[in-house]
Length: 127
Image 1 (cartoon, rainbow, N blue to C red):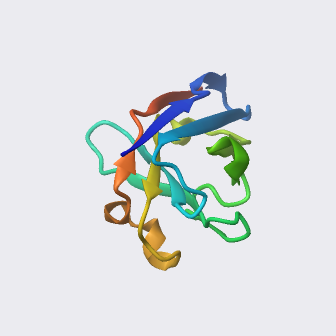
Image 2: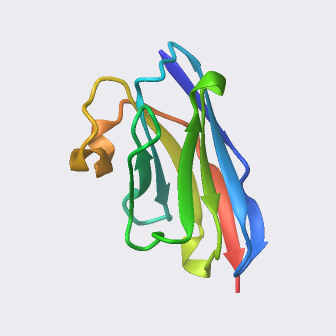
């Protein structure tokens, strides 16, 4: 079992920044693919960003490219999402996820590839 706990969400004005953290515990491994997704009530969960085990390859949703940065610290079993230039449409619950058995590829953008999820952290961007 892998437990994921997100933190760092909150209320911020448009144009501001937040850094989300996701701490992993339990059966952790630096080989896991880690991803961030977000969800607005009434809509499907949406891919935001993903990172491979070494941190040297990442994918981003077009909507956040150039504004958000995903990174990881394997020594701390933690993955981060730095969010700059926040917009009201970024308002959502943000979820951290771990893929414990996959191969990093474009399929890592799909939520069904991930087998562990955090409880989510709310990000609200006011206009």
